[in-house]
Image 1 (cartoon, rainbow, N blue to C red):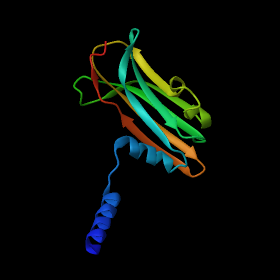
Image 2 (cartoon, helix red, strand yellow):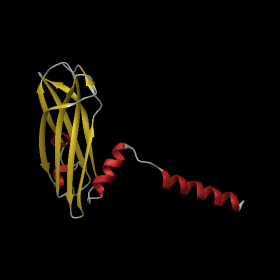
Image 3 (cartoon, one colour):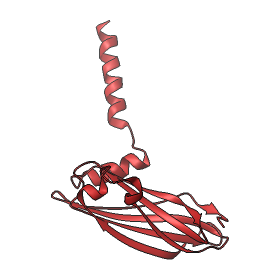
Image 4 (cartoon, one colour):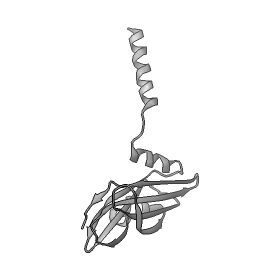
Length: 148
């Protein structure tokens, strides 16, 4: 019976050590190294009025990083393989402005162009600075065809 208990504990320990992270967990952990727990999400492009708009959203645990720079890019592709950035906008925020103390709409940032049928995606790059240092990263959304 004792051997079974030891074997069970070894299996549980092995699973804990070898568990791999999903995308958003890895993003959160990457920024955590800079002293803040944050998640950065690229949303799929949407039609807003007569425009195609890319949106990036950030959410950090309190108190938030000392500075977070988020660049949102709208990218277009004729074939879904080669991407060209057609709009880009950089945003800087810090502290409570990156946390749930602000509404989600205040933590979403956009870049857009006039509407056209194509394949689109959102790309985001970020840099989080805190007392522990700086962490950088990037992510892209799933592509979206013929938004307009």
